[in-house]
Image (cartoon, rainbow, N blue to C red; front, side, top):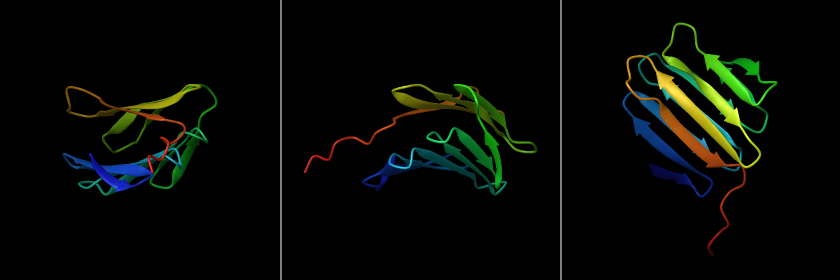
Length: 107
């Protein structure tokens, strides 16, 4: 995982580009093969797939992207945000967990 800014990280894994933005409490994913995008906004409990938004009403939001490999569960708890992302054809899901507040600056 490579630092993106002091507020987040960027990861390239297989055909996915993943950005984790701590301050915004968002995870962005882009499938370089299909050119589809997925944005998870933990603060608003919202999943946006190619501009179409799905709002969560409970703690767990299951989502699937029609005609794409994206599917998973966005789990929202008091102290953390956790994304479990399953990609079709992969044997293990990709799990990302991040704090709802950024880490203290070490300056």
